Image (cartoon, rainbow, N blue to C red; front, side):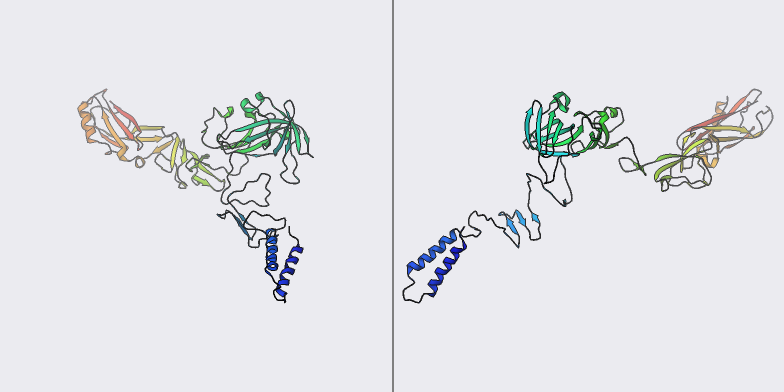
Length: 467
């Protein structure tokens, strides 16, 4: 480095040439020597060069920032921000605040437990190693404990993306050196049946603890399996079904789940207990699933729903008992005071709907004397359990009467004259018109009432008139 004395010497040399008054005193030699001295100074001048590689031992202040790379790949901005395409950190990076633009992507497994990065590995005994861990910051210190089970993973950035996992147990810890002595587990004691020695740069996490129950839990998120998994009671490298305390996501392969109707491609939640205020069940299309709610006997002033109950915070389908049948509401709110019946579309009958009966009575009694003229009316009473169904509810178009006797031709003529829908639930009978002409003692004629409901179900009953 040229000293400031060299600058003073050059200044004096050029001032002498400038102030010279004698004729021919500034010879070519004097001026040439001055320029050569200046050139010699510039060769070792204490300034940053831009025509070759250079360095400085002093602080360089760039008030307007800096641009690095021919394509301006790196920009150092006056506001303190840095913009670049990629950052590789061999040591540790400490951020007071880390902001992701729109999304944060994590590959592989993310563990929430004690951790460390192995800096050096020293083989000290058969199956034992001394592991020294990297300090992530000045005050960093190991958080591992004695008998901790360490899971150390090394991922190689080769074409096959190979990886190795080592399981060890902590025997002793030296916090001053940020190191510990570990013992390797045998191959038969680790998942996969092969245990690899620990390696430098491997990331070690606490998988469990061989003795301390308070350190036998670990939970992690696996992007490969699509599961959030919480393990408890981990006292060895290999975990069993009983170690799985909870999971959220795609179900793991557990024996306790193999006989359950589980869709292995859909996420589930598994835990010992559930504390929750609201449970809203929906199907895979987002439609709410209703919980059946038994409201007891139907009340005329009762409010019954098939929908969301804001008081109890859930979707419910109310059920009531009425007329010997169990009914379920099918609308958002049933009409108050309108009882459930077989043709009331606000309700569907769950129990007793098929309990339909028909009773036929004669208004003039059950016995009629041959050789006399008489009239009567056959009245069909239709029952749904304990409820009597009216003709208006059934509709005449669903009512059929047929005559059955020994007079086949007469029966056919009578049936044609009384087609479906021509007569309601009350059938007038006149012995001179509706009874076969060969009416003698012991004769029998039957009148069959058939009710066909809108759902296609059919019910029938016969009334026989005997002489």
